[in-house]
Each structure stands twice: as structure tokens, then as C-alpha cells.
Amino acid sequence: MTETLQWLDTESLAFPPLNSALKEPNGLLALGGDLSVERLVSAYSNGIFPWYNQGEPVLWWSPNPRAIIPTDQLRINRTLRKFLKSCPYHVTLNHAFEEVIEYCADAPFRREGTWIIDEMIDAYKELHKQGYAHSVEVWQENTLVGGLYGIAVGGFFSGESMFYSQKNASKVALVALANLLQTQGIKFIDCQIANPFLVDMGCIEVSRQAFIDQQSLLVNKQLPEQFWLPRPLDLAIL
Image 1 (cartoon, rainbow, N blue to C red):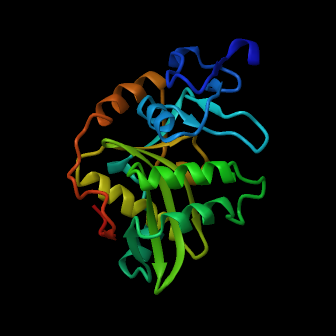
Image 2 (image 1 turned 45 degrees about the vertical axis):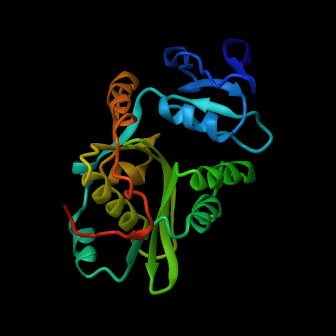
């Protein structure tokens, strides 16, 4: 496998062409490099993300197909809709990024372990400080009960992980994020790879080329200066 992949060094931020990614494992594009802010921003700007386990070199991915949730097609079933109308939670933006990523790393439903290792946590905390990584928090009174985090470049948001400790809390975070992005006409959330939870929430798969065609427009989208400032988020169903 390593003979067919490009090893990245720490001198260049360039990635190989996306169409050179392996078919098996699906989307593996390159190895090595580092998790510097500059490299991560370059990666996400080109629809590439890191995903690897402790003890491995950094692995960089661009899967085909790609999983996305169209923000205007988020699936809110009757039960969730009823829950949202009398929701016991309140939602905030960028109030507790460090807590959210640490909860995501330790989420009890991840029986197989986590790729959110200490090196990743440190890198994404730095991305947050630099204004690229963002969190949505779900609170029950003063207790953090759910949330998600991801990376934003321009109008492109790539979701990384979510967690919940109370009923529907991660779904509530996703609804709030979709509402927020729709206020700026942002058409989709990048989910990277589909799973049953995301499919239940309206996730679809598109070809890598279709994804990049849409993503390349979003990364150049200018958002209002205040867009990612910490504040409460709306749960109204759009």
C-alpha cells in the first residue's frame, strides 16, 4: 500500500491529485506530514481530511463517494419534531469547544475506540483558536449534554464528530447547525463518510467530483465577520 501512496514531508503543504486516491481502502490519498494549522487548512480547503489511529502515520483521505447532508433536506421525523417544540435544551455556538472535542473522544457509544487521539485534540484546539474549528453545544440547564464540532473554511463546514449523553442531544446540535448554515445560503454539511445515524438524519452520498465542484464554491464564500462568534443558536425548524 505504501508503495502507491505519496509520503508528505514537513516542507510542502501540497497534496497529490484527488483522483490518485486509492479505491481500497476507499479514499486513502497520502501519508505523513503533520497536523499544523497550515496543513490542516490546506487539506480541508481541498476536501481532504486526516483520519488515523494511535501509532500510525497521519493518513489523509478523500473518499469516493462522499457523504453530505443537504441543509434544506435535514430529516426531522415526527418524534424529533415533537421533541423540538418543547425542547428541554438550549444551544450555543463556540462556548465550550474544548469540552465538546474531549467528550467526543470519550463518547461511550464508540465501542471500537476513537481516532480522536491526543495529537488530534491538540491540533483541533489550535484550529479553534485560529478561527477554523467550531463547536455547537447542547445544554440542559448548566450541564453539557451533547454537541458537535467541525472545521469551516469560508462557507464550507466539514463535520468531525458529535456526542450525546441525553436523549436527542446530538440531533438537536445538528438541527441548530443546519439552521445556522442556511442563514447564509450554505447548501450542505460535509459528513465525510456515511453511517446509520447520519443516513437517518438525511445524509446522502455524492461522487467525489460532484462534492468537489460544490465544495470549491463554498470555500471562497465570504461570511459575515460575526458569523462564528459565541452566541445562542436557534432551534426553530426552517
